[in-house]
Image (tube, rainbow, N blue to C red; front, side, top):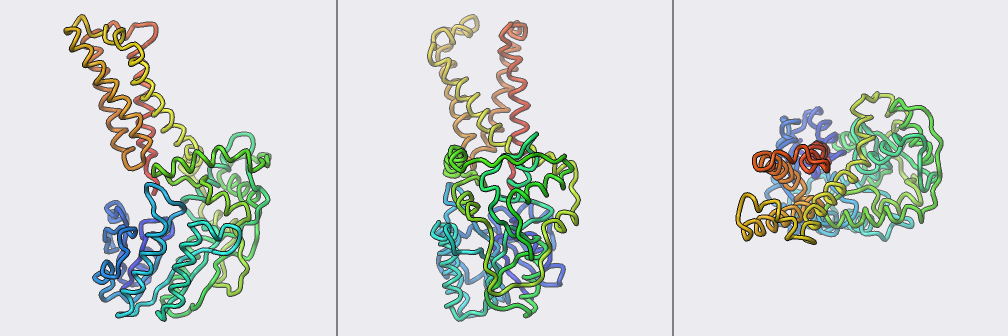
Length: 423
C-alpha cells in the first residue's frame, strides 16, 4: 500500500515509518526538516511540510493522490514560537479529512486520552476536536490512544524521566505517586501495522497491563542506566511552579520543554486510561527497557538533558553582561583602543562590539535563532582572541584574564552546539 505518515521525523513517527516500510509498503513521510531523516531512512519518500500551514483542503489534495492510508503521528504539547496547537492538531486535520472525502484513505490517528482534569487544556482539547471530527467524517478510520511511550530513543516526557533518573544522590519528584501506564514505541508501530492490515478498528487504548507510579518508573530507569538506588524526595507541586513558569517562558521562545504547565497538569492526575477497548498486548516498562540495554551515550544524554537549558541560559547571561557592563562606563572601556586608533573610532568600535554581544546573548534564547547565534558567538570569540593577541598580547598575562576567560566560553558554546538538536 501507499502510506502517508505525518510527523514521520518524530519519536513515534520515525519508528512507525520504519515498521511500515519493513512490511513492504511504499511510505511517504512528512516533516518540517526531512533532510537528515532522508540520510537515516533513505527507503522512505520524504516530503517537507509544516502542518500549521496546511489548514485548507487544497493544501492536502496533491499529497493524498494515490495514498491508501494516512497515519497521523504529528503533535505538539503547548503553544509557543515553534508550535501552533489549533493549526497543527485541529485545523490541519479537519482540512485533511475534507480533502480525503474523494479518495477515502484509511486514516489512523495517534491521539491521547482526552478526558480528565487536563482535558480542557489546548493540547488535549485540539486532539479531541480532531478525534470527534474524524469519528463523524464517515471516513474509514482508527483512533489509537497510547499511554506514555518508551523506546530506545527518548523525547519529551520520556527524556525527562531519564534525566530525573540520573540525578545525583537523590530523586526530586513532584507527583511521585501519580499512576503511569506505558508501552513501547514498537507496540505503537505494531498496532499501526495491524490496522493497515485491517485487523484493528474503532477507538483503542494502547497500554501495558500494569500501572506504575511515577517514582517506580524513574527508579526503573535509574536501574536501566546502571546507577545505584537513590531515595525519592517528594516535592510539593508549588515548589515546581517557578520551574514551570520558566519552562512556559522558554516555550514562548520556541523551546519544547517537558516541564511546561501542560505536562505538569497531565502528570498531576497521571497517565492512566479506562480501557473501554484495549488493543494488542503491550510490553511492560521493565521488558521495554531490558530489550534495549543502555549504553554510556544514554547516561550522557540523561545527565546533560537538564544541564542543556542551564548552558544556554549561562551563555546568554555571559554575552548580555559582557555587552551591557562596558556601556555603563563606555569612556573607560573605549580607552583600551586609544593606543591603536582615534578616540572617535575607539568609541564607535566599543559601541559596536557591545551591541554585537547583546544581540548574540538575546538571540541564543530564541530557539529558531539559537544555532546561528552560537556560531556567531564562536566567530566573535575567535575574532576577539585574534584581535587582542595582535593588538595587545600582554592581555594574556593580565591577572583578570580577559583573554583567558574567552577559552571556557568557547568550550561552553561548542557544548551547546553539540546538544542543540532535539530530534
